[in-house]
Amino acid sequence: MSPFNAWVLLNGLETLSLRMTAHSANAMKLAEYLEAHPKVLKVNYGGLPSHKYHELAKQQQKDFGGLLSFEVEGGRKAAWSVINATKLMSITGNLGDTKTLVTHPATTTHGRLTDEEKAKAGIAEGLIRVSVGLEDIDDIIADVEAALAQLS
Image (cartoon, rainbow, N blue to C red; front, side, top):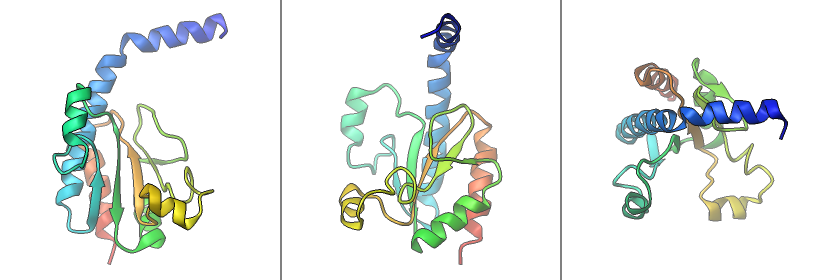
């Protein structure tokens, strides 16, 4: 690593715990919102009591992180419709930033898997993955709400 990159990394580590606390709090609020939404079939977030590994996650972690996924009915077309309708989130294949990012795992991170492998891994065509950032969470929720509202 170059001296400059080492310096940048060390500077980032100084605020890492504060940023992760904020990521986790925002992700929890978004997960709770999504879990109650009638157009959302399933939410995957270890911080939710409904998650199958919630108890284990509570034992192993202080917080639950900023990454979550949710599934909408209507498969790939519906998922991309929601993703494309967001205004504040950046569409990307990479996750992890101070800005909220969104991706469609079936066509990005897991795009090379067969349909059978995707099914075994829980990667449905209607699955949307969100790396929740540090923006005001009410703005992110409003963005997701507007995107979900356009589904029939």
